[in-house]
Image (cartoon, rainbow, N blue to C red):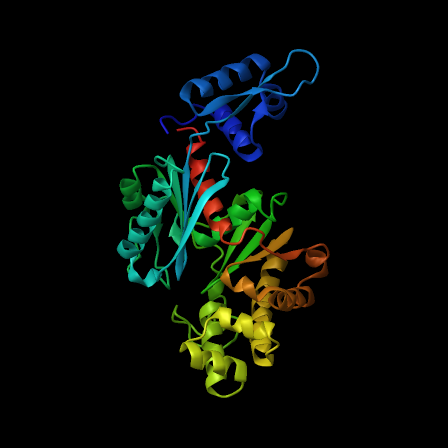
Amino acid sequence: MTERPANAHQAHLLKLLRDHGPQSRARLGEQVDLSRSRLAVEVDRLLETGLVAADGLAASRGGRRSHNVRLAPGLRFLGVDIGATSVDVAVTNAELEVLGHLNRTMDVREGPVAVFEHVLDLAAELRKSGLAEGFDGAGVGVPGPVSFPEGVPVAPPIMPGWDGFPVREVLGQELGCPVMVDNDVNLMAMGERHAGVARSVTDFLCVKIGTGIGCGIVAGGEVHRGVTGSAGDIGHIQAVPGGRPCTCGNRGCLEAHFGGAALARDATEAAQQGLSADLAARLAAKGTLTGVDVTAAAAAGDAIALDLIRAGGTHVGQVIAGLVSFFNPGLVVIGGGVTGLGHTLLAAIRSQVYRQSLPLATGNLPIVLGELGHDAGVIGAARLISDHLFSPA
């Protein structure tokens, strides 16, 4: 990308075209507070910069037909969603439609240098496939707190070696484009807001249950990050007083009692104690158990697996109930790898929230699974970088 919008009017027009696709000048004029002559000037300037392109004649609305404009069809954004155990990399067009998406298993504890090798390999594969000659910008999500202005992880509990690492600067140099960095759960929330189940909701919570647990907070249509970028770190809210030790050094945290890592631990204990023949057989066959094994055992009707899911859902619901009473959201979205546990998990969460929260807060509160799956994070990442690039320089 050679230029950014020169003023707030151009930025608004770019975001309208991103969020709603090609539009006529007349339709754009209905959505912005500009005179027809000023609108024409701003659109023509965007055409000159190459940020937008002509897109044929619009449908007739009586009188002279208006011309459609669209975001430049050659713009390409890279969305990178780094999780605890895997990384997703996708390329989108300017309207944030996913053109290609690759996933690779890895361990975030290998450190930033090793993880970025995976990211750059996958980005190179997407380039070689012909989907992008290069990238106009990249958004990156990491599974820990981020100092948003600097694009730097801050004391992330499950990411040894990442504290203070200049993610934005290093990846920007490697990719040759602007980079923005945020917490992975915030990007999941942005993805669901842009193209998923939260499209029409301005105030909602997006809870990601993966290896750990976090929460994206969207207020007034914008992600709330807090003063230091750690808003929504609900995995370290106490769920069980005096409970299991947590990676953060405290005891009884939600994450110590549920999430992919805790579920695998509890399933392994149950199998070793002979409480579940199904889990014991899976452990004997594979040597380890994961949340996927618990899902499969539950689907086969295993009582212990179902109990583990329900107990975990109750702990999550207990924490969400407090958040709902405090924040009064219009929607709660549940996403992340553990959502393969599906409606057993969702039912336990709903039951606890509806039982514990104030009736006024839960009277019309949907608690639903996310729609986008693995696309949520990469679409949110593309949305993040496009928000940056479609803002005045």
